Length: 342
Image (cartoon, rainbow, N blue to C red; front, top):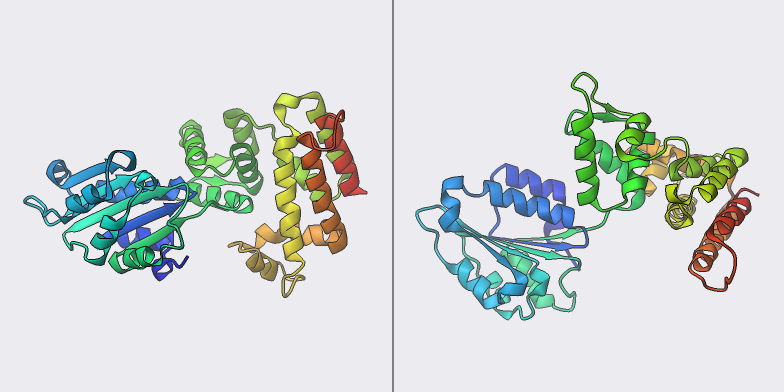
């Protein structure tokens, strides 16, 4: 599905902060964080606070029809320049014909914000999509890839004048995962704990505030595998086998799969001997983020990487009970690590 005017979150927010509003914002996608941020900004800034009682309407998709939304959007504002109509959980609206008609001729005095979470507009509804694009902004909020989470963390903290080293960012990304709403909430808790005279997040801060061991964790296991450090990798795996509450095969497999999948992609980079070229090929903003992939290409052949990916898939299936009656998760992980490193 085409996006209107290649809208990104950053470009959309720049326009909003500059006071440039469109008649319609159709916000859709699997990542609710960006949808909420855009919607909340419009709700808080499009109207002065004293005008919101009469000129800001909030609907929920399960409680309203498309006709009711369109009728509300066609109203004129009361003693104000504009009105704001927000529809949350819009994916629950079944019939959209009335909305399509409104999109074809939107009101210039209305800002209509439609929040369609956990999915997007059916690509077969071409006329509906065209109508949205004609009316205003069609924005798709996509899940961040796992390897871009540390970059997101660093950017989020930088905006708040807080620094973080790459290891700490990776530890937090691994511990919290790709739910950006939960991730930012955890970061905010860490920010509150920092003293005013030391605005840095270190591995020790992560261990103290989030409860992730700086010595035995998935990031250290991944680092040991990247650098083919057999002793350290086995030390970590044995630790987790004895302390299953601290980590498990179910959290490590996606981490390892993501790394080797991207490592295989790196082999197809036009100039794979250049860290900058590999970073660009993997859609990384900072060249240093490609360092582990440069190391990986020195330590693992392309053929070995394909074999490892296949072995990870096999291990994943066995961990879920497929073709495996007796082997416990800890033994499966030891077997996988041995296969990767030898």
